[in-house]
Image (cartoon, rainbow, N blue to C red; front, side, top):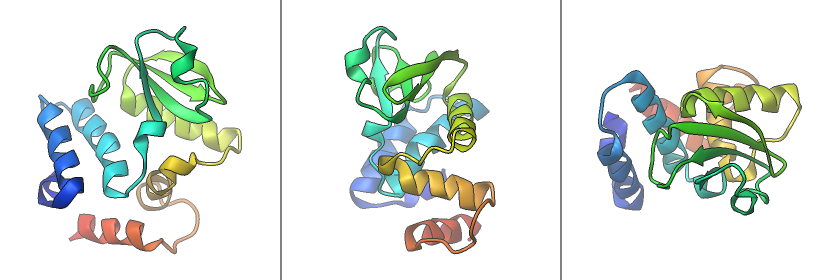
Length: 154
C-alpha cells in the first residue's frame, strides 16, 4: 500500500481513490485493493475486464467481454462487491463467488485449464501474477513488470 501512496500523476490519483474506498484492513479488502490497483500501476485498462451490473440477466453489460469478472451490485466503485461472477466468451460461467480475490484465482485457473489467452486489456496484470507472484513461465520480464517487481523488493 505504500507503493500506492508514492505514485504521482494520474496513476497516483486513481490509486489514492482506491485507497479512500478501502474502509478496513481486513485481508480480503486489502487483496481487493491490490487486484484493482495492479492494473492501474501496470497501465492496463481494467474497465474492459471488471464489468458491473445489478443482475446476471443484464447480458448487455457483459456480452461483448471475452474474459472478465462480473461485479454484481449498484456501484461501479465497489472494491469488493457482495456477489462476483466470471465471464467467458460473453457468458457468465460462474456466479455467487464469495469475493473478488476468489473470483480472480478461479478465473486464473480456468484460463490455464482451458488454454485461453489472457485478456489483452489486462495482459500486464496477468503476466505479473504469473511471472512474479506465481513464478511460472519465463524469467525475462517486460520493463513495466520488472520495474514493479524491483519497487516491491526495495
